Image (cartoon, rainbow, N blue to C red; front, side):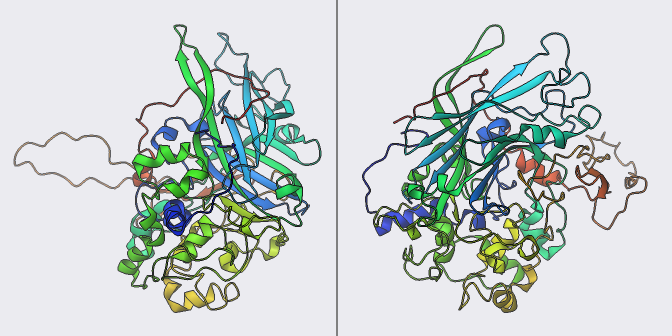
Length: 591
C-alpha cells in the first residue's frame, strides 16, 4: 500500500461493525490523558520517531485566517524539545525527507490535495570551522551564515503527480542567539514567500506553541490537584512550517461556499533505502516511506500501544477503521474511571458515541451512533465532510484527522474562548485547532461528558461543572502559551533565546559509599535554592526562562524528572533511515 494512498478507488459502504472498529483512534485527544507513556501533544511519541527527531510531527493547527476569512492557515511543528542553546549544529530540517500537509475534502479518508516540502542543505563549514555562523547574520544571504537550507514546495491534487509551486525557497535558520542573529524577526520575515494564486508560506524556528502541565500523567495532577501550574514546554522551540492558502484551494471541487469542511493531517516521509558509505556519507534512494503522522493532538502517545505506535505513524487514515486493537479504549475510555476513583466524579455512560463522533467522523447529525446505547451523537452539524454540498452518500470513511468548517467566521481575539467548542466558541478545537486552544483542559472536560448537555452547545461548560466537574474545571492551570502569539502571519511566536536549564540539579546524585557497619549516618542537608529564587513547599527552585518575545522572565522551571524519563522511552531503539540531501522537483505518488 502507498504511504500516502492517493489511488482513488470506487466508494464502498462500510458496515456498522467496520465503523465501530474505526473507533481504534477516535477520541484520541481525550484518551490521551491516560497516565501512561506520557509526552506532549505528539512529542517523541513512538520509538522510531524518538530516534529521529527531525521527522517527528509534534503539533498540527488549522484555522481560518483572522485577517482574511477567504484564506486558511495550516501550521505544522516538527523536532520536539529544541533547547535554544543546542549548538553547534542546532536543528536542521531533514534533507530529502517529504514534509506534507494532506487534505481530505470529500470524507473518504484519502488525500485530495497534498502540499509537500522537500529540503536541501548548503553547508559551507567543511573542515574550516564548527560554527553555524562565523559572525552576525543580518540577512538570509549574509556570508556569515555558513549553514543554509532551502526547500521546494510542490502540490498534488486528486492523486496526480506533484507540480512545482516554489523552487529553492529560503529557510529561516535556527536562532543561534542575539549576538549571532541580532534581529531574528527580520530573518523570519525575509523567509516568508508569497504563493502564486494567493497565500504565503514560511519555514522557520519558533517557540513551541503547545502549552500544558504534563504532570496530568502523575495520576491526574498528583491525585489531589497539587501538581498544576507549570508549563512543561516553556522555553523550548520547534521547527515550524506555516502555510496560508485560499480556502478554495483545499475545498471539495474548489467551492468553499458549497463545501466548507475539510480534514487535514501532516506526515513526514523518508526514502525507503539508506546506504552508509565508507567515507561516512549516507546514500538515500528508493520510494518514499511515511514515518510520521499527526492529525488530532495527543493521539499516538497513549491511545496506541507501544508495539503499534510506529505502525500508526506509517499508515494512511484509510487503514484506521480496519484496526480494532483498541476500539474498547475509545468507546469505553479509561480516564473517566480513573477520575471517578480519585475525585468521586461519576463517569459518563458508555459507549461514548459523543467522543467517537468528535474525532472519527466530525460532529454532524448526518452520521448515526457508532455503537448502540451509551451516549448519543452530538445534535448539531459542525465539522464533518458529510455536510459538504457535493458529498456523495455512502462514501464516508471514519478516520482520525483534524477537521475544520471554514464557513464559521473567525472569533474576534477578545471574544475567543481557550476552551473552543466546549466554551461555546465554535471556531475553536475540535473544529480545527487554533494556537491558543487549551486542548488538554478541553479533553478533560469532554471526557467527563461536558458535551452531553440538553441543548449543546449553549449551556457548556456550566451544566457539567455544576454537576460535579468543578474539581477539574480549572484543568492544569496552564491556560496560555508562555510567549504571546503574533497577530499577523505566521502567527507563531519567535523562538526562545535563553537556556531552558536555569541552573541547579534536581536529581538524587550518584551512588553513595556504603557506611561501615554500626556507623551513624548524618542526614543529608537540603540543597540550597538558587540565590534570589522563589520557592514553595514541594517545588524546585525557580530559574530564568528567556521568553524570546518579552525579555527575561523568572518562571518556575518544569519538574521533568519523572516526565522526561517517560518522554525518553524508546530513545535507544534502532535509528530511522538517515539520508544525504536529496532534491525532488516532481514526484509521482505511489500506487
